[in-house]
Image (cartoon, rainbow, N blue to C red; front, side, top):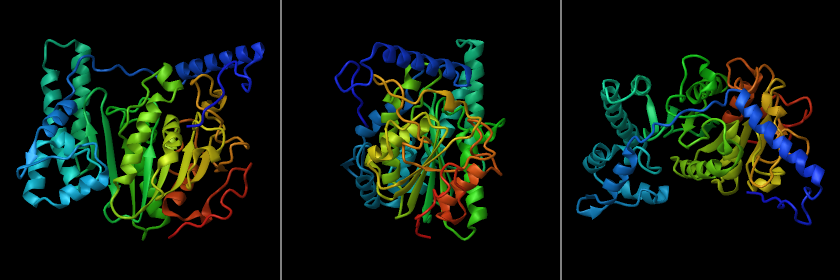
Length: 409
């Protein structure tokens, strides 16, 4: 992550008192904007137990065929080789015994992860069903349990391919659309603030939630290149900031999310090319992750970005092409793009000095509309995801954004 001069240092632009006050005022504006634009707080679950931590503890003390189990934090390649040595029976036994571990292991066979996560979801649903009748909870607590139970019901339906699931706290999840095993091109949707298991999908405004974003992208990719072997991942497998507060204006959670995003990419099967589509705070995650991403990532596209923790694309130290877009009605444009003392996320990715390729966001309709079907913004994303850059529409301020792009088809 790019470092910036400290306040008061000889090279700092903040040595002038008036400039310092302007910067502090700008940061105040950041919090006011957050407070008035839908980044509302989502309450945690209080002292609820952490089932994944318990599962990890059991895994670390477990064994298979007389041998200890590998670290769940091992490199995806190590975990892949471990599962390759097991019989089908032993793999299934591990998935059924430790579903909250196996279902989240990058490097484990995809079919095994899907199976494990169905088991984990079924168990989590049972827990929430019991909580709906728990008179020891407040009415609000029982209502939350009912919402979570219905969310888990939804995730269990229609043979959905759940790639990651953790019910602890506000919850995390990831879902695959398409055949990830055989895909030649993989798109990963990285969402922003207030993403959790309850907001993973929405019946109202579906394209403002990770599942709806991914579904719209996958459908559009297939319409652009029907014969292409593509897959899309709705990736909400990191802890995002919850509402107004320091977390939304700093990079701490982005740094933690970046580690998880890098592990996801390293653990993807085959040799598929990967594109990241990063919305709002998700673009901070992608910016932090960029430095050490697997080189199979060919494109990083950000929309409605508060910054990528960098002054210029060169500070990202990645071979991937960087694309940026912002709708004219997106309130994020009014948030100061700066970083002072760790607050803020750096330069505006759609500014001319940042160096990103600027895409048109026509018809996006504000901060949450970039993945709405029929928009130019979504069509641009889909063309990047399929490698068909010939039809990309650039921003009026960067009419040759697609010049020189050659992506393997």
